[in-house]
Amino acid sequence: MEEKMVEGVPSVTGSSAGVRYEGVSCGKLRRYFSISNFVDLFRVPIGVFQASRLLKSFEPDVVFSKGGYVSVPVVMAARWLKIPVIVHESDISPGLANKISFKFARTICTSFEETLAYLPKKFSKKAQYTGSPVRSEILRGNAEAGFRFTGFDKHRPVVLVIGGSQGAEQINELIRASLEELVKRFQIVHIVGKGNLDIGVNKRGYVQYEFLGPELADVYAMSEMVVTRGGANVLAELALLKKKVLVIPLSGEASRGDQMENAQLFVRKFGWSMISGNISREDFINNIMLTFNNEPNYDSSYKNGLKAVVDLILNYKK
Image 1 (cartoon, rainbow, N blue to C red):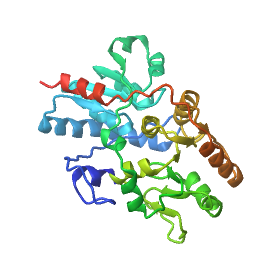
Image 2 (spheres, rainbow, N blue to C red):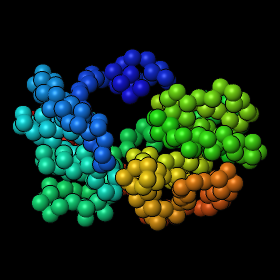
Image 3 (cartoon, rainbow, N blue to C red):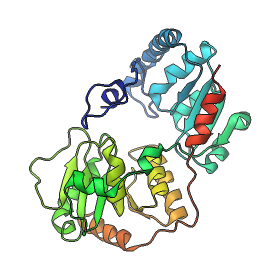
Image 4 (cartoon, helix red, strand yellow):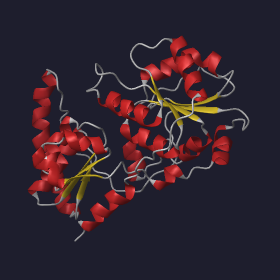
């Protein structure tokens, strides 16, 4: 899906950035024992070789990395070719891939000021708190356009449910189990993730999409409340948009606990709601009602790091 959006092939929403896309081999960095760790160990040097060849042909002035195991071979190749690397850490605590990439970075950016405390002292001189870069288009949505796109009634409140580009199975199941009750009070926009559409669900006041491109800004604008996972980038968007938010982060058993940490910080800062673990249908419905009736605390603003990050990138331009 992301490849189609970037490269220019018509995507789910018919939109694309028209940017050159290249893939390299990469090995997932697992924190637990798995035979795949041994196999993936050989994929990393292959990826470094492929990335080196691509970087030589592209001749970039700077490499910007947002983390994830796919970024490691590219960052290593860039350092080998003496190309400046900027690494951005989205979460409060750094992931394993970024911990490796920090060694090769000239500058380390963080979404949260608290992240600086997680970094070893040897990295402190090249680390700075920039905030999370949130594109301006996502903050300029049009509610009227959102209502036209979804076909919803302007006089009934809208709840957006979003679990990421791959969807969130737990949230998808909770919504479908609670739909009969929820549509009595709300209109629901449900982003289910690729391959997760349920064509058997057809209710007035409910629409589902695998993914939203430019339309997401308009859907954000029309939504009074959002139910989401604990990904730092989406949480940053919602903080800047000043939405009512119910966060359902992945637990420490299903992840390294980064979503839980992110969610807890936003809950403390803005008074959002959060539930996790084994959630019943009744608990889910009750928390949506409570969140909708609660007014968040937006006295303190969230820092959009877009300008700071772009300025850093442009400063490395030859």
